[in-house]
Image 1 (cartoon, rainbow, N blue to C red):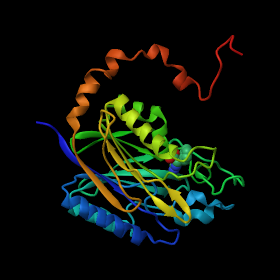
Image 2 (cartoon, rainbow, N blue to C red):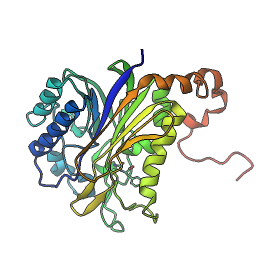
Image 3 (tube, rainbow, N blue to C red):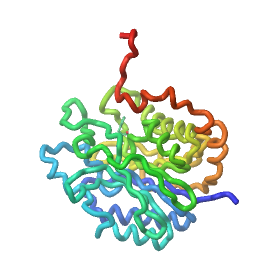
Image 4 (cartoon, helix red, strand yellow):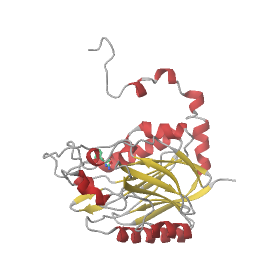
Length: 311
Ligand code: ING
């Protein structure tokens, strides 16, 4: 009997800087209701789904940015989301900015089960952008200023009869992200993203933003025999265009369904999790085919080091 799970990507349109948490949550509750009417049992919200993408703003005194972070989860503003999801028996992934009691700051995502219980937490490992004001950029991308690199590694959890892992945005551009989780048995990898339409760190043709968005998730879904769900926060936020392109990707690497708009939009797919088995048992049977005796530089080196004699 195949393990069919109706999965959803709950894309969100822009969140204005002055939009309240309550307004974001009510938009997300609407998406939960749509998901319920379409038989979903798990949906994926974007990265930083409760606020505008605030790392585009520079602030000398980081403590002045505290209002962008959640000090506890769930909290008064988000409890209605947890309740609506539990009523609908829908699990979800939620991205938000976390400020811990000790004052540490992370770009965080949680896994919530169908009873509204937080069963997993992930903190974004790969932080793109920069930590100081960069006058050359039309807008800032200060994730290295406002967040620490994640300290929880890449975990996996049982979720509705499958093994699920989490990532956040820039993590999707690093193959190590998916390989670590699929070496732990991941069959579904879920992630949210806020990706500016303009690459402020270098000259790049604009069409490549969406090409790279899908290339990274499709290729890694294929190379790890996993379902991958990528959910965008999309549209123009405070003058900055964020790409859409939310998608549900099969273990073959093919996009099963993709968002058509830059607004709040739910896309769903009845995923047969067992189609992971063929690639994981054959072409990407890690135990049979990997040769780890040749891979050590991947974890022993951070940057490039030319082999002796090539200097
Ligand atoms: N956003 C972008 C992303 O990785 C980025 C950062 C933009 C990286 C453009 C490279 C090029 O999709 C986040 N939030 O990581």
